[in-house]
Image (spheres, helix red, strand yellow):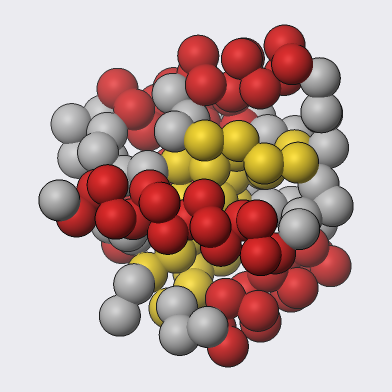
Length: 124
């Protein structure tokens, strides 16, 4: 079963995403800040990370950089999730190491498409 780590500090966003992903057959883990997300990624080695960019402790940009420079987690695909919808925000997320980018509020079907594309790429 595909394991997804959601790194999100907003309880409503976490709940919505985790329930909808579980219904689609994903195993979901949740971290509530960037530091916890980095630690959980290292210990659980999820197949994919959904990473909010505006997080307490360590923000999503820094968490992505840490994950992509760590030999243990660098190959895990990361999708940045953010309410920041400007082109430069997307560029900044990709420059930090995220493999894709999606805006909030999350359009679930679009997000699933991005997840499927990255999971297919990472397993080949």
